[in-house]
Length: 281
Ligand SMILES: [Fe+2]
Ligand SMILES: [Fe+2]
Image 1 (cartoon, rainbow, N blue to C red):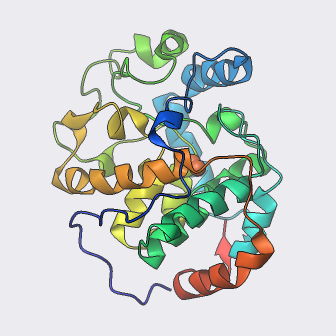
Image 2 (image 1 turned 45 degrees about the vertical axis):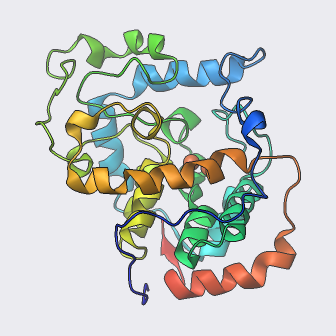
Image 3 (image 1 turned 180 degrees about the vertical axis):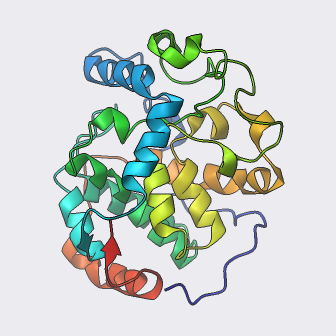
């Protein structure tokens, strides 16, 4: 249970060092969807954009947000996740737990609060959905609102022509089923690990952490500046936190995984402080 005082929604602190992140010149090589040999990623997004409809998302929420699949400790869930390699990610072929440790250790090296480090360590835990039998296109990859027009600034936008919502007048206008400034909480995002983990963690972590978890794959918003017409004041106040998280997720990826055994006692303490002893997934 979270027993600490949540931080205010004021601006996140500037990092002090970024020793564990890729340098600025190196960063151009990440999220390069035009690089050759990414047929795996392209096929992934073709499926994702074709099948993530408004009805599909609502069905997945009904299916998974009862959290009735199984019960396990946070560590067991992480170890379970460790068998997965993410097909949507052009930058990494390491086990998930290595990516989580790299993200969290880079956040810790910059002196951020412990809840921020823990957020880095668990932010992809929702990918366990893949191990429950969901196809990767329904779990990972960039997310976007459904129920309104798809932005041209989403990765591989050409594949939205395959999505039946693109031809449905209820869903293909600027606002679709939503109202101006309704707030992202009222917006159905394409289904995946972000929303699933947010719902699992919402009683346990401070609001900036929940924004990072829920919207870390919503690049059309936090990087491309799209969908502002659906946001409310709380969303706009927390966008900076989502952006603060992103470099740790993206630029801590490298082929030198940290050694879990050396770091486990520290992360044991963080989990004991914030998370329940067992998670209902
Ligand atoms: Fe993720
Ligand atoms: Fe990640």
